Image (cartoon, rainbow, N blue to C red; front, side):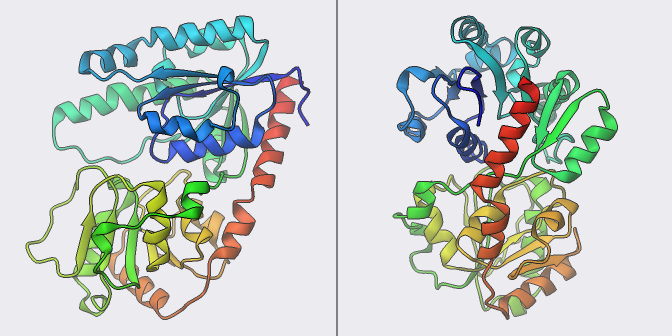
Length: 373
């Protein structure tokens, strides 16, 4: 148990998509009286995630709405920096725990660490593969994502990751860093578990579909699933549902029988309906450093097909209901889906073992104790 005088400042500057349940789970697991958090918020509704925590312990910073405001915030987030400095001085902060990469602080991280120890979460030690439709989009990603991401990792003295593969990479490339491992938190919150909503786009679709859920990015390999499904007519007894936001980056075929795109943000209260009606969930990632995507499917016991990337194998191999295919191979993917559809094994054992809150809390408390002592 942490000493009550060792207050933590939790930093959350990207509170959306997968980062939202990630940060919320860790904060709720570690919170002690006297802690504080700074959250950069884009959606006012998300504030309700912390209704159970003291209001005077949370500093909300609204993300700018205008393009010029967003650019200025990315280059120099003055209000955020001022809030951090003020809390360190006035609240007896002993440790800053950066949860969501905090790329806007790339120019400030070195000075920040001179004021207070920082535990920095490494989500992507190697930048993800992303497909861009223009040179300006590529430059934006390089300048606002890839370069700040690298600077934050270069400068951080003490880091934590939720992937053994990524931990090995950090230890070999950054021998001067103190690097730690902690289990990935579950992405399942109360709204997901209760699941009172439904997916209107699937109202007239029979249960037992093949599902991909997540933002549509190149590194997630959604194009492989799309191609494998359309080139194997024997899979068409069941619809393919591709659910998630972002622009569809791959070329679509003129005839795509039984493929259903739900190209929008899926609310937490809709996920129970989406997952429990699926026969199999497929994650055909081309690359993955760490991810909690398997927590949602396994919470509901749905079988999964995963690419044989080291991260997925280390987390999921040996559990019932899990099938692997050769990464990037459409034929192997189609065969794995067919095998999965012939079984009805539950994946709940994976959830109980790999996403237990107690294991994550104990690991993080140990890491924090090592830093503060």
